[in-house]
Amino acid sequence: MVQLNSGDKMLIFDEVQMVWEPLQEAYFEEARIYRWKVETNSAFRFFMQQVPVAMTSTNSGWEGVLETPFESGFIQFKMLFDNHETVIETYCYSDSRKMTEQQYTLLLEELLEESQVCFQKSGLASHVSGTGYTKDYSLLQWSYIESSIYQLRNIFRHIAHQPLRSLKREELLMRREKVTHATPRSVSWVERYGQSYGATPNKLPSHIQSTKANESFDLYENRLLLKNILDLEELLNVYKTVKDDEIQKKAADYLNWIAHWKNVEFLHGITAHKGTVAITQVFRKHPHYRLWYQWFHALYQYNSLSFDLGQKLALKDTFLLYEMWCYLQIIKVLREYRLLNDTTSLFTKKDGFYFLNLAENKESTLLLANGGELTYQKTIQINTSPYYSFTHRMIPDIVLEFRDILYIFDPKYRVAANLPMALGEMHKYRDGVLSRITDQQVVKEVYILTPVENEGSDKKDFYREDFQNRYGMGAFCLKSGESNSIFKKKIAEILEVN
Image (cartoon, rainbow, N blue to C red):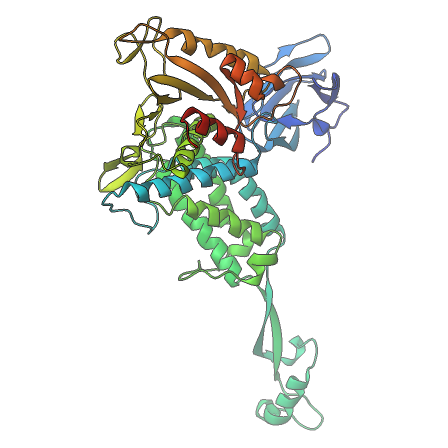
């Protein structure tokens, strides 16, 4: 990290401690806005990630606000004072309101796992293969790349700084003045072949065979690393062709990283690995090579299925993945209670392959064995039946219907301090959805699903069972990697499962 020079000082305002602190010491979180100022009489320009930051002039210098990227990882700031350039690289941490990176990874894995189980249960005659990715894009795979490629870049930096190497010894015939030290093998060679090169009792031969040790990076682990880089490059070129400007731009940026990685010195002269992949002790124990192997192992998990989300990467935000995960978690509970007869409607077929048929504003319904229904993104408006809305179009995320009564679940990935307001919005479902036949309200209970724990005295009541039973609304903490037993109990209660 380069320190500021010329007495110029960039300050960031810490809203937690309510103090101004140097840029080098500031704690950044993703998707947040920060105030900054700098005192200088010089001509000044300010960049974040090579993009100019807007600013206004003050009596003592310049000030403005900056918004950190919606992704954790390294961020670079560049300041130009007249002709002097200062570059600072710091880290942008994951939003504390979000789930952790481990929870996010588990969310993706559990989403795939339940999809596989439902597909097997569907009994569809499939053309599903496990031979790698197809030309159809994978939302799960792109989400994994987008969320963790900064981690991969950091791992590669550590590897490039101290790559694995070995000493390869080679026997060479050298002019005697270039031989720096004698070895027993050299002495034995002179005694045996020295006369052929002019050796006499008082004179050494003109050439001597000596052992030369050369440092080499041509190891299995480095060859596999290069193969992984080339595979990732090929994959990013696929994503670069999708009809989404943001994904195209990010894929192009990541490809620039790949181009730089391929030109790193220790990879020169190395041929990419071909054939089967083995897990060596290096991949098991080396602190950086192990993380590299694990990253690509996870990538291929999202790459091994030829059915996936059918919306062709139209969705890029984590909160939408969380919604789909919550829906499949409810399906998992229903499956465990043996209430699922047929999961065929979860999938759609195109070009000989099956895709998980979940997309924003696209209704998907499962019929339950006890006569109930579970619907993802159910559309309710003035002309729908058997339920309608007399105000405006409504699309609740998850609707569980049983005995002509609706229970609505609304996943909120980042709700934190807005939980009371988010729950207040649920009244529109309670009051605005009516039966087409009776004109009576049909929504009995509404709940927020969130990965946020029940912290804070002003919010903990929403998670309590007595509060939920009294008011027919509240919140459940639903997180990946956990049993979520309280929520399962609620589903069993609604569906009258013993």
